[in-house]
Length: 218
Length: 218
DNA sequence: ACGGTAACAGACAGATCGGTCTATCTGTCC
DNA sequence: GGACAGATAGACCGATCTGTCTGTTACCGT
Image (cartoon, rainbow over all chains, first blue to last red; front, side):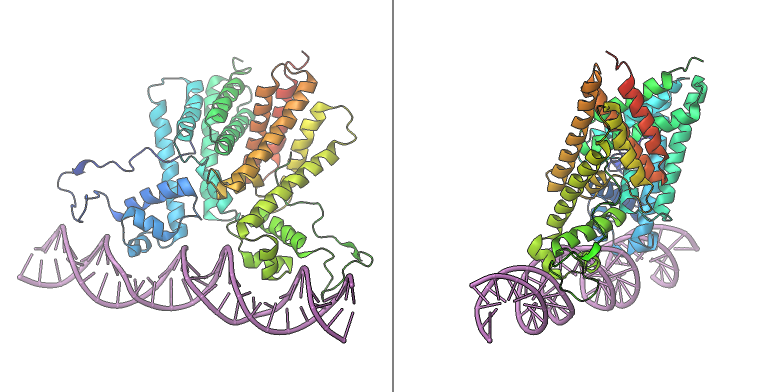
């Protein structure tokens, strides 16, 4: 599961104008999506690139091209927007991984590699700031916080995916090895952030593959 | 190099009152150190536990028991205080490592292990928030920022220390292996932060040791 | 045509931010 | 004793923050 850069997903491109006869109000360059979605798009872009605490509500609504009130009717508070942003990012990351894995057939090692590949391509985008979930945990360190819950869920899901692949590989110790692969993944993203290079992720991928392959064939 | 929790160094304990006939003014419980040092102590404690952006100037000066003006005469700005805090932490981390390594004789593997041990004991303290340098980089992501410079210096020094130990071990590829050990170190601290447990660091230490030992005997 | 809903723009409130400034106090040195 | 340096408390400033509220506009279903 990639935990990184700005989504390349359904963010900016309204590929065919106001999509048929959908709601087509607003003056300039009709946005084609509702305020809630545009707010999440703006939040993702800004929070990913500059950090959550560093970006104020005003920046978000200006970027989204949305009224202040819309943010509060749809989300209620900045904190709630932050949670929604993280949850959507988690869903999108999962979708991206599934898309990348599709057509791989039965290749558990390839599934593990795909997670690193997605992170690596995210790291190559400019403005990369590392794993957004760990970053969120850094900015909102309160243990009981909803942010912590989203982060924990993301990480559990990621580790389970690693573990499943290892089980399918017939690895003798899938639990410990999944933990190690996640550790290496975390380190790769951290190093990549600090050094502004995708190299640590490449290194992490190689390391992870070695861990997965070691004594894998029974 | 431990990159972690609140210093156990010369923070709070004035072990012998106002130390002889030194400057002993102030009303309650004479502080025994100057405002600059007390500010750095307070900054370290608060920034480490709650994050830099989350802690305002007022909290820092209140915790330090120091006048607002003192902060600005000694440091000039909050940003400068942040840099000073990071630089002092870096110095102290290095001192702690040297202290831990002293008496180890010629044990390069032990020196590597010591870095992980220090991180591990930091992670066991409550309020642990992970690597403070990576956290600072997260909170101040501007590439040219002085924060980035301090973080880069810290990481370079750490990697060099790993490399030196590996060279002494006769490792065939000290550069790549040092990078890998740092990667594993980063991952351990990240996981430790996210999961609020020292276990990832323990796992990282084992992994690092295996990396250092592999094909080490020529 | 009309009423309802949802989004709009923007003023406003209260808190907090980093930073400046004045005025007072205290200990030190001459 | 008196000038001086450094620290103190705390008022003050403008900017910015999250969040609320008012009033207007535009679309949509009936």
